[in-house]
Length: 210
Image 1: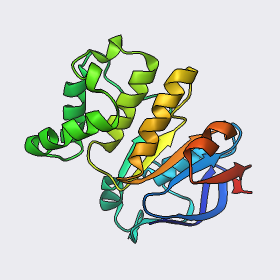
Image 2: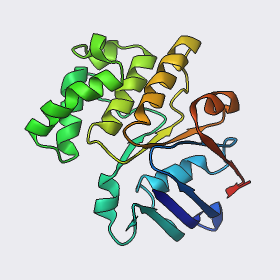
Image 3: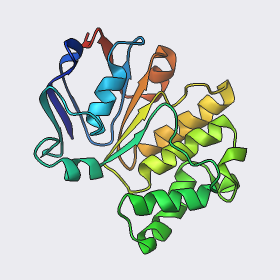
């Protein structure tokens, strides 16, 4: 379970997020919805362990971000809005490399890779150079790098941004399939898409849950 209590984050004197609290159950898909500037990306970066909160608590299965930051981060997979890809690498090689960077042994990567490729529907492009892929496939590779180490909590920032209608349906299928393996949080400003994908929605406005 993910627990967030009174999360507050300032940039200088500006409060980007103020007194945000919520819980997410295991294997739940939750959307975080809001206009640009509402505090979505700041909230996700704190949950991903990339930013420290100014105040408040964030825990995954009782592991506190501030008390045990390394253990906390190992439980998280994160896809920013722009997937962090090395486009000159082949899909399979890139995912293997990411797995090792995240602490998996070569044997563990080899065992995990076929499952991740199947979950993200990458079988047809697994040996292609990332640079040759469509935007939709690049998003799927981005999701694959977020889950290669089998995290408990996966955070996807605007996963459908820039996709055409057919690609959106494909990404929705991938995200829905993740639910059997982990808890998922999705950021978006598109209500219709979040409502089709998520079990529950949190709405942020001016840094607060409304």
